[in-house]
Image (cartoon, rainbow, N blue to C red; front, side, top):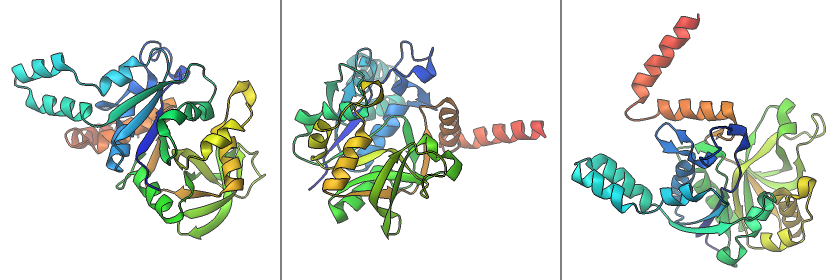
Length: 290
């Protein structure tokens, strides 16, 4: 089974970034010179997936517009001879084929995935969360697709976290079947410190078989009336199997203010035009603190 589509949920309100996100979708907040959603989409495209299903909500039109063709802007840039900018704008509009599905109520990540059922159909698909940016030589989604190709079962991305922070994450317990690949035996949502020996935390990248939709149908709402994707994946794990992959790369939680700042510094340092000057600026700041 080949993965041809990716689901990117963007319906969240972004309350952790208020007041910046009162009008602007959190996914459009800029890391250096592009919105966070563009990093997510570019990772998906670099992994060989061209069709992206955006799960949107009211007030999210700016995200769809960002990936759409803009005749007025392109004409203006062409007339002014700003060809480098024109190339970049055209690159964005040609990145993906976009399909949008509305999540009419904020009923959780599981519900956001569930509403894409008619668009996805009976085929495996990727899910990439906009809050998680992964800087990697080989795109994180592509790494996971290689694992899916070998095992033909659903895969979730994990990273090691400090043992005293496991209560902040969904944690998987399992058997390592090859370097960095684990057959999941148990999934625990935010376990109390000391109640699990595992420190493998789930992050926002998934490759899911279509059977996940039937599992979501059987998943009862949890706290706040939300349908949790983790609960549905645990049903899938029990019935078919589930693998976790310890990806190679640096992950940043761009949905958190400190994580967002760390991501900005990371991508600024690697920027082809700004990296050197920014590194020098940081060195001056550090020296002034000594």
